[in-house]
Image 1 (cartoon, rainbow, N blue to C red):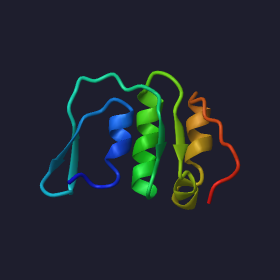
Image 2 (cartoon, rainbow, N blue to C red):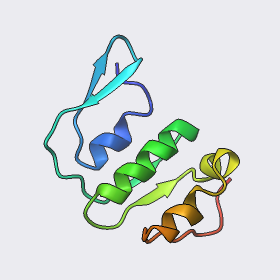
Image 3 (cartoon, rainbow, N blue to C red):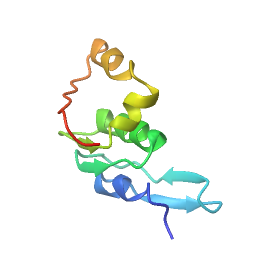
Image 4 (cartoon, helix red, strand yellow):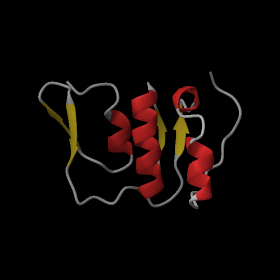
Length: 93
């Protein structure tokens, strides 16, 4: 059974493979990631999904960004400084 953080990878075009019983995620490639609407369950998942979204073609919507703000409050402004096009929409938990 795949951990709950794996489904968003599939939505974006990745192919997750469980390795060593839920401790590692290996994405088989090369695969072109495409924008998708995904939801993150924790700070690690939202950070990984944000990085994947930046590498993907198209627009991504990530729900659960409050996890990121809780631990990495300056990450979004820093990425924007580097040229990332990030828009936040108020709402959600």
